[in-house]
Every structure is written in C-alpha cells, then in structure tokens.
Amino acid sequence: MAALLARLFGSLGVLVAVSLVLFALIHANPVSPARVVLGNDASEEDIAEFNAERGLDRPVAAQYLAWAGAALRGEFGRSLVDDTAITRTIAQTMPVTLELVLWAFLVALAVALPLGIVSALYEDRWVDHLARALATIGVSIPGFWLGLMLIAWGAVGLGWFPAGGYVSWEMGAWPHLRAMVLPALALGLYYVAIISRMTRSAMGDVMLAEHVRVSRAMGLGRGRLMVYTLRNALPPVITVAAMSFGYMFGWALIVEQVFTLPGMSRALLNAIFRRDYIMILDIVLIITAIFLLANLIADALHRLVDPRVAR
Amino acid sequence: MSGAALSVETAPRTARQARDPLFLLGSAIVVLSLVLMVIGPWIAPYDVGRPTDDIAVPPPDLAEVPGLLYAVITGAPHEPIHWFGTDTAGLDVFSRVIAAPRTDVAIALGANLASLVLGSLLGLLAGTARPWLGALEMRLSDLVQAFPVFITGMILVTLAGRSFTTIVLTLALLYTPIYVRLTRAEVLTQRHRGFVDAARALGKGEAFLALRHVLPNALAPALIQASVTVGFAILMTAGLSFVGAGVRPPAPEWGLMIAAGADQIIQGEWWTSVFPGLAISLTVFGYACFGNGLERRHAR
Image (cartoon, rainbow over the protein chains, first blue to last red):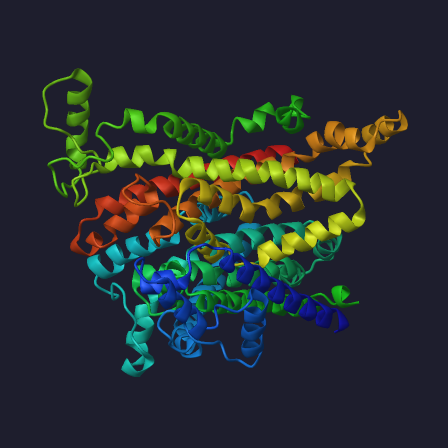
C-alpha cells in the first residue's frame, strides 16, 4: 500500500513536471495567439489589449500559478481564441474519445489474449507462425489508413456500417454501436499485435519454469496447468495492456479524424494550429493523467496477481 | 565496430539462419527502402510535382499489366502508363510513392540515428558515472516518456514550424529515452565483465574503459531496437502529415497522399490512398522483420 502511495505521488510529480515543461515550451514559441486571432495587420495596441484581457501580459510564472490554481479546482479556464469554457468543450468531446478507446481496448484484449495463449501453447506450429505473422503485420499498418480501408470495405462495399460520423445513444443502442465498430477495429488492431506478442512470450517463459515442469510431471491436467501458467504470465501482459490503453488516446485522435467522430481531436488540432495554449495544456494534461492512472491501476493489479511484488 | 558487437559468436549458426525467410524478406525491403531513399525521385517516371493531363485515371487492370510491361521493356509504342493511376490533380501516384522514401525513410533514419547516438552516449554515462547522474537521467527519461508520443509530436512540430528538420529533431527527442534505457541496462551488466576488469587492473582510466570496452559491447540491443523504431518513426511521420502537422503539401509523402485520397475513397476512387498505405505497411513490416531477425540471431 505504501509503495502504491509512493507511486501515486510520483505520478502527480510527473504530471506537474509535464505541465511546467509544456507551459515553458508553449511560451517560448514566437507566434502568439494574439497574432493568430487578430491577424498580421493588427496594431500593437490591439495586441496589447488582447493580451491584457486574457492576462497574457503577466509574468509567465504568475500565469502558470493562476492556471494551476484554477485547474486544481477543476476549472480549466477559457479558450484564448474563442473564449468558450474549456471545461464544457472537454465535457462534450471527451466521452466520445473515451468510448472509442474503451471499445478498441476491449477488441484488442478479446483478440490478443486468446491469440497469444494459443500461440504459446502450440509454439512453432502453424497456428503460432500465423499468429506471429499477424502480430508483425498488425504493427506495420497505419491505423488511419486501416480506417480508410475499413470504410471502403465495410461502408462503401458492403454497406454494413456508416462511413463515419457519430450516432448518439439516444438514436438507439444498435445504430450507436454500429458506428463505433470500424473505428474501434482501426484503432485496436495495432494493440492486438502488441498485446498478443507479449502474452505469447510471457506464457512461453512461464511454461519453461521448473514448477510448471514439475506439475506436468506429476500429471496435472492440461486445463489446470494452463490456468496456473496464465496467472504467472499475467504481470507483463497487464503492464503492456495498461501502456497500450494510455497510448491509444494519442492514436485515437487520428482515427477520429478519419471517421469524423466529434471527440477531442478536433478541439486539440484547432488549438494547436491557433496556438490556443490553455486548451492544448488542458487536453494534453488530461491525456497524460489517464496514461499515468492506467499505469497505476496496472501496478495495483500486478500486486494483486503476484503478492511477491507487494512484499 | 557495431558489426563486431553483433557477430561475436559467428561460427555455429549458418544452418538455421538460412531458413529465416522473414528475415530475408525484411532485409530486402530495408535495402529497397534505402535505395529508393537515395534514387527514388530520380527514377520516378513522371515529375512528382507537375500534374499530367490525366485526371483521376485508375490503374490498369491486372490482366493488362503483363502486356504493358512487355511494351515498356521492348520499347514498343504505347500510351503513357500510370501504374498506380493518377490523383484528382493529375499527379502520377506511382512516381510519388517511390519518391516518398526521400522524405519518410530519411526522416525516420535521421531521427533514429540522432537519438541512437545521443541516447547511447547518455546511457553509457548513466551506467558508468556517479549514481545521482544516472538517477537524474532516468527521471528525465520517465518525464519524456510520460508525454503522449503522437500528440507531443504534433505540438512540437507545429510550434517549431513544420519542416523536415523539426520533425527529425522532435522524433529524435521522443525516442532518445528508449536508447538511454537500453544502453544503460546493458552497460550495467557489461562493465564488470572479465575483460573489462582485466583492462581496469592494467590501470586504464574509466573513461577509456567505457568508450573502448563497454560501449561497443553494450550497443547490440540499441541497434536491434533501432530497426523497430525506424518503423514507428515512419508511421509517426506519415500520421503527422495525415493530420496536417507534418511535412507540407505538395511534397511527395505517404501520409499526405493518403490524406489527399481520403475524400475520394467514398466515391470508389481507391487507388490514390491504397498504394501509399501499402507502401508504408510494407516498409514498416520489412523493418520489423529485419529487427526480429537480428534479435533472434543475437539471442542465439
């Protein structure tokens, strides 16, 4: 428990450090949001007024503290460009991204775990070769291109799925889920490859261990043996799955672009192109926090599965 | 020097090695990508920047391909051929696909070379210098790796100005921690091997030992990783330009080409984005197979 708390504080430290680095980085950039919003022929006075209104004329340290204080209270501030409340933008867009990532994650786990296990059980047989080839192909295909191919196949060709766009839950569960199938596949395939590969190698390592050999020699059934092996092979798989979950958010943004899903990608891309600092900062921090949280959960699960770590 | 590090146990492996078809395929793809990186734009049949008069022409039917190839080889008179069709601007897709490694592969290699050199030197330092320096480097690596890679890439490249150089530097920064970790871990196991202790007993300085004996032997995992990371870097470069945060159009670049063809795919004009995507997948697959093959050899 103490170790977990230490990890938690470590993660908070990383989060603060990430926000500091981002803040410094963004403020070191010569293009100011005032220039982007007001255009190249805005007068110096206009720009000064723009900056004064939004507190951009204060020292960077003061700006950071003001932002951090508000963020701690759950108040993410207003967009520098169009003055909308960022909390609202995030509340509207985040659920879509989160749902996409969750489906993709479930798809990845549901395919990767059986694939990795079968691959390890039948090492060097054709199933294993096939699974490994699939894993290598899976990490080679860019998700955004796969998305386009899925649209060409499942939407244009077969007509089973919509070619893009978001259908809210109110329109019915089936239409909603149908619109999420292709994006989830496009995002999940890469992680099928990553997770199945890790499952296979972790299972393979454990199956060579003495206790497994002894159990087999004592006549333990294949099913029981597999359950024990799997449990011992889980920790690295959990770690990789959690990291994948975190990384998925980055790539989810590009998949959202392909399928025109109203997730965080549009807000973030607009913010980046228009130098909307506060918006960039908030979105990146949320995604980083999710990444760190996923790792913490993995750590806790790890301790649950393998009490020796908790010691 | 790196070659020496990778081929310590050369003698007993020939038999199984020959039967690693994926490694052979991977090596062939890697070589092809390097060749195209150098001469791709020169051997492209059409100018990659100047539109032709053929707008959105589909590629020839598979059945016609042998006949067309025959005509090209024998020099028989024939219509201008667009192997992969042309896009809505009239640009020849085949020419652009084979010219793109000059951008995609060059960025990926440049970024990896920079991060490999920087990362392995920092890793060597972390593994041999005072413990607090190593600990500091590890914390910094944690910090860099806590940033979401793709999003941070987007932000850094856009803020620094979208260009070849900024993409290389951004990717190099993001990938350096990988090499720091790998090299440090390997240095820690290598620095007290027998031959290092022997050289130490002869009175050689620590800096000399680190560079002459430890580093060459600690490089193998980093070099193997590099092959896989080049693949990531290609995916990342293409992804950045796909969302408009990478190389600027109209440069021949795989991600840009896919983005340009994305709108047409609904109308059944598949070729403008299918071929560049296949090129990415094949290239990344090749580097991954090459890396896996190297890893298996090294482990043996």
